[in-house]
Length: 273
Image 1: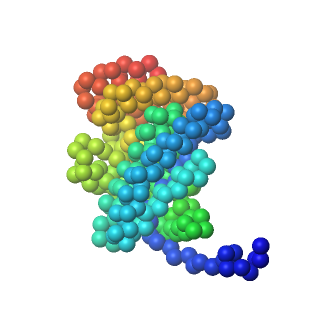
Image 2: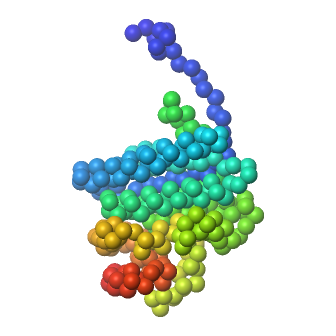
Image 3: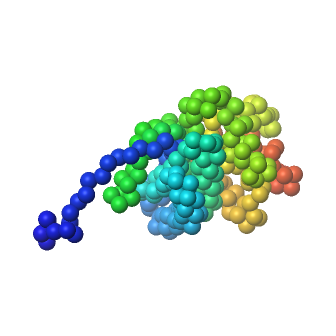
């Protein structure tokens, strides 16, 4: 084929950065997962199901607002980005964190895969035609994922600074917005002083997505499936024992916020981990 033919002609593009909230999420233990084709298929089908219809609707919503909404599945990693609006950027951050929470819960529930990630704010550019995503916001989110250590999605403290808020102040601001959308739901962990199990205050060095607080609101079948996934995977490998120990402490610190019926059964199986 003639390289000068119109079909092969390449049109250079310019990078037009947008100010975005960006999430980089990575599957833990993916190399082990590759040994089981059924598990790999489950992981990608879960991602496709979650990234598909819901994200396409969100893309249309943001397109109407003339804001960028981007999502990309790259091997075992997921990239999400929402452009921060001038008027009310906290709503855009809440939207992004809601997607992160859904991914974290349902990937673990259906695929027995724990994820880790970082959320930052900064320059972001996407060119779908040439399969390009790049920017300082993405680079920082990737760096945060690397230092998160445990199965959690942490939030860049510079986001709080950008809102002129404190560590805990941003948590309250985010949860207040989410509460107006869904009563009782929280997106960011804020139970810094809880001591439900009598094992000492749960210490955290970062703001992170609070995925377990909605455990009691899952349908019975989904809650049982998630419980089975946690019990099957947690403490299953010496290599990851420190990460899972952290997750156990986090889940135990969240128990008191669950409904009374679910709380009793949850305390029972969590106390055995």
